[in-house]
Image 1 (cartoon, rainbow, N blue to C red):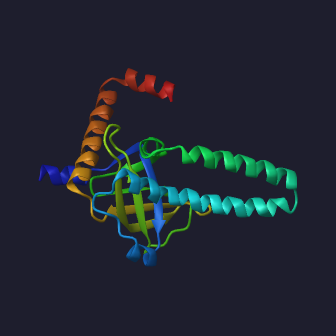
Image 2 (cartoon, rainbow, N blue to C red; image 1 turned 60 degrees about the horizontal axis):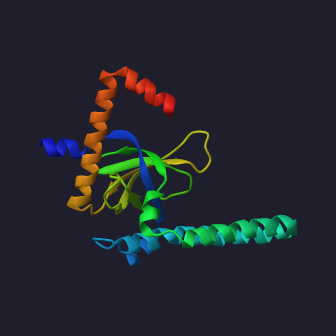
Image 3 (cartoon, rainbow, N blue to C red; image 1 turned 90 degrees about the vertical axis):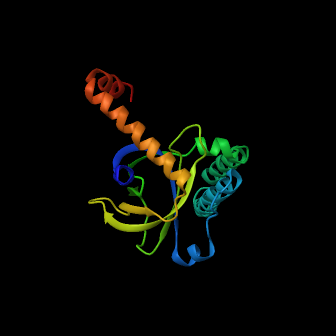
Length: 200
């Protein structure tokens, strides 16, 4: 019973978290492996960067109609970024997962996203709760979508993990437990919290 309680204990915390929206038709054809290796994770999330690169090239071509000088400068910058991205390996990629404020539990997660999403979509998450262990790649069902007031295309999504391995669940629960201890220590010693606030 104690483990079940911890499984659904929720905590607001910053953690490395990247996501990818998967439309229902794509989800049927794109099944995540049970134990994705570093190469698979790298290639899967690199696809997002390739799609962004295509969008950027399209925008640059439109800018070129008004200012060839600006378009040339943007193309040069984009080429430089592409070159740097090609030198990133899987280990560096997992260290580069952006920090995101999430509401986390062993059974699900919620956070805000800045793009349209449908309740039938799936969301693939790349999480790295523990610094010295491999990241977690998991597909999630969308439980709810809440528009953020006064923010266009900004939504809070609540997700439940589809098939989280016991090893990955252990990582999440260990992370939650360590954060609980950290927060409890700050509550007992307000001076530590004040010092941390000043360093942020």
